[in-house]
Image (cartoon, rainbow, N blue to C red):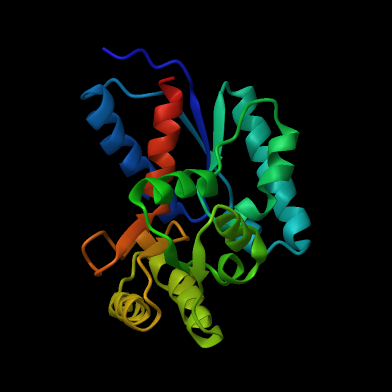
Length: 230
């Protein structure tokens, strides 16, 4: 039996559906690595997503919510903490400074996996914030990757699909996402697609398209479980 030494804390609720997907991966990956019931201890703090998304104070208010959640996880005994969504990583450094335990970045875990798989040119999909603000793209480019993002019109539609459909487990426009990825593979020569929103893996899996699929939720959870066992 593997001795698991660290308790994982996850800030979830952004959205509840993607948090459930994190938990599914927690079960699947733990069983692969440790056996049927020998799982790391896990604490989830599920925030109110309505309050988060529509916070009247914008990212200042959202950051305060995330810091409150991170501190609550720390008080509850979490020894490593993570955010179960890509977009909130825009304020990852501020949250890390507010707690005394290490946080695990979804972007760092993604970069490690992309290097392992040997891709260079990738399409980044996610919320409009993730696709447009530099925090995500710059981290990838500094790590040596070429990052392509969709057109403005496509970004608006992807953002709408995430929040109006995937967040409610509605996969009506899954074919749109697949067609978009395949078009960028053909026209832009991408080698992989980053599912840079943790709702997107609910709709797109490895094998659905002709390029490498980077499921950031699964990659992140695998890294958390690896660190829990160190």
